[in-house]
Image (tube, rainbow, N blue to C red):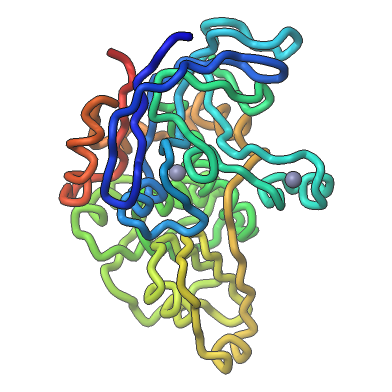
Length: 326
Ligand SMILES: [Zn+2]
Ligand SMILES: [Zn+2]
């Protein structure tokens, strides 16, 4: 058996290097070589021990840019194809799956959360979860999953051309929401405490505010993953408006019911997006969505143990990308 080096999060605050057996492809699975792993809030929270639905030890990594090594006949994939990976392993049998909502699969296993993910050179994965592109770079392919979170939230909101949204939080998820709000022909005000993130958002053509202003919005997205922000977000929703919780917390959320009723709001939860991968890939290919400025930091897989804890101190961090090669 071939051996490979993988990075394991043993417990909150502790990564280690581990020798593991390289996977082999069998049945409906393809074998892929992992080249890029995007780091997201889920990983940062898991390291701090604050991620819902999470258990240790775990190999993190669910934002992947990969290359096919071998694929089952009839999958439409060839060795060398570059792919984005849908990291949501759905059961295809439960009520949600059969109703066409596989993102809410009742037995959903998310790669790098419920099952071991991509901080390793090889992975065996059902071929149906691979989405190839001959045009996108490995970096861009690794960003498709994050973009999907934004795409799904914007779809849930029903926002259309000419409308104006408030997006609270300008981390990668807030930025993903912004890009799909803009792609829908709408505009956004982004509320964000960090000055460097506000400057980043302004370069993407959105207005910003550091703290709440008096104006109300028909559509409000909260992408902070902060209990306090989520509770306060109700205040910014207009009469008959919609509030979409994109970020999530382990806490209870409480709000003023008289405000909620008086303004007759609608509150949505939004989680991952399964069906949007081909659409998002073609939007990046066409330039409708531009992710060029996103990757602010890079590290190598072998450096994760030492460098991951330093990510929390990097004020200008938007998205860190792990390079698995070499
Ligand atoms: Zn993510
Ligand atoms: Zn299911």
